[in-house]
Length: 270
Image 1 (cartoon, rainbow, N blue to C red):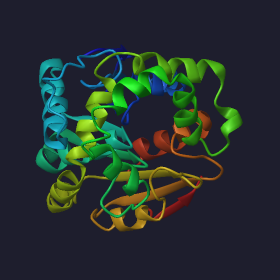
Image 2 (tube, helix red, strand yellow; image 1 turned 45 degrees about the vertical axis):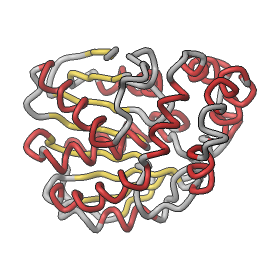
Image 3 (cartoon, helix red, strand yellow; image 1 turned 135 degrees about the vertical axis):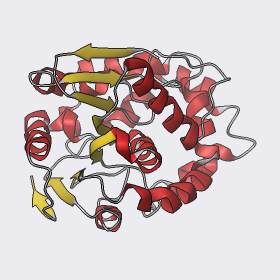
């Protein structure tokens, strides 16, 4: 598992979303590492970590790998931040191991109550599509730019450097194949997550969402927050699925404020 490590202090672990990698956090790493020891991961199946066909794509397996990472690094407890599918992974880990998570920050996490993209998920599991999609997607580099810009509330904010950075690991064999495997177990994974969520109820939790998210429905934030006894929601106006990319200063300020005082406050407008 490839990862970046910066700073000293309490451990802060950053988990990217599907088809993302540690690159996702580049604009907030320096700020977060001023007071913390920050770990930004490339989860297996993504980025420049192992992308072999042997990597188990189930959500429970991803949560287990994240737990193993904490064990190997000697991290007994951490502030855990997860984006999109990485947020879902962080949630499942926290539910199974609440003693390992001081605070939980979920950035537009994939969840059972968002219905956006359901048809695309089904399409990726079709016998005539799933084997053909990865090799074709690797060749169609203009598709990469479309996928990345779609994550933004304001697509003009997706710079050439951003497009190139996200596209690089998509050219590796195994990345799109892993994403297809994730799609196959999606519905069973969401059912498992919903069943396990009550076990994370006592972890102080921040839920951050861009108001213009086209990937995971911002309305599902309220449904998710009901599972936590200490939670707050922060909406960032104008941002899409990747608020730490579009509005890094605002995002970092919201997270820093929460980590300094994780007491509950229901809804904040960023």
